[in-house]
Image (cartoon, rainbow, N blue to C red; front, side):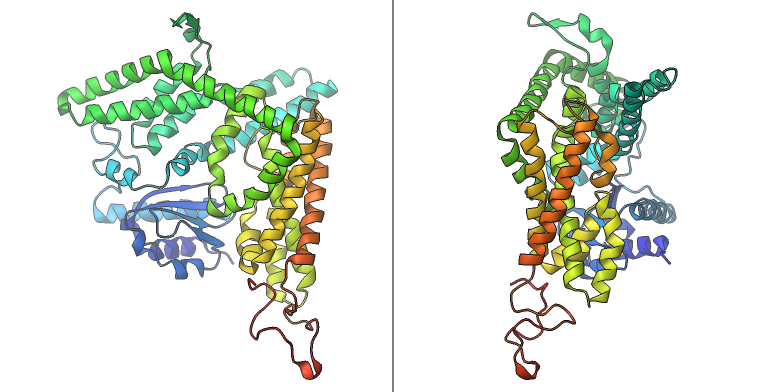
Length: 492
């Protein structure tokens, strides 16, 4: 039986104890820890823990422990509870939790700890990861509402569903600003207040450089930039104002300076960048769709393995704001399908390896729903070659979907987060949901088949014995020309 409390205790003990943890977050599959001393982590023992599927970022302040969907939520909650208990026993407040002192945005040690954080892209991704559940929920509701509208069913309910689905996206800039300030050591509510300027309808009355602003111009990129600037201004004020004036002047100066800069500069710049992203994505698919799909589908698994795939979230979100869907996610989802095909080939080929086949059976449902980490860390990556052949399957599926984009049939997702079969309710495109669903299904089948065939043909070194099976080319008396002790999963 799963014991999440014990898992949390073991993770804390092997990462240097509660005093070594300055921040705790999680995404769909990973527990993310910010460490004071990365050298205190016992990586080998951490990887060996039951339930831990992988460890990313060992030796750096940003450690990711792969636990899988569902499990990560309960383990993270238990880690936070145990950290709170440890902090209470120590008689202090743990750094990095967002606790404030007399209205200040963070405790005195937060700037030092944030500077020791992960790479900038990873930290930007941390801004968007907590927003994914709302994006998924609203995206599914939008998809259901679209089907009802097209079918002419429940006309009295569809306006309510549209309002529920659209409300979050209309104010997403505020949430991005809040999360940005929180991640980079500012006061979250000040970040949200400055970012709210981006979506306030009254900005239409603002004129600068002979041009009128539009509410929402710059979108999440403008909100991100505004909150980053607000955090810098706030930190500058905190270090220069005495306590009596700090409470009054710091919030005022922060909102005023960052707000004016947002209105008279950042919204224009972010709007230009957002337009370039949308134009570039459309050009990429209509001009080089098959090749672009081949590259994106083939390279996405390595990004997932390194934990860098979350850095694409701002791009997805910008495309959804502009066009109503992101054309990149269906292409990237093909990587998971190639992984499923490769895992099925391993299951067929290593039919006597009971332990590995059990792992595949338990990880396959998650893989079909687009959660690739269990299969990556439990099957393909340890075996070596099947990871590469799974990428080949992803390339084939991506090329399939990209080819139709060149023909004018774009496939997009109205929200980010799920992939695999879980993406079907979120699919739409420039020709409507029905063609998008058909093309996406064809891409999945192509990736499954190619990943399976490539793994079966090239996923195992020649002359090596499938575990428990008879070696190809075995010599009389049971001798085999392959090196002793190696299995087909060992890298050549």
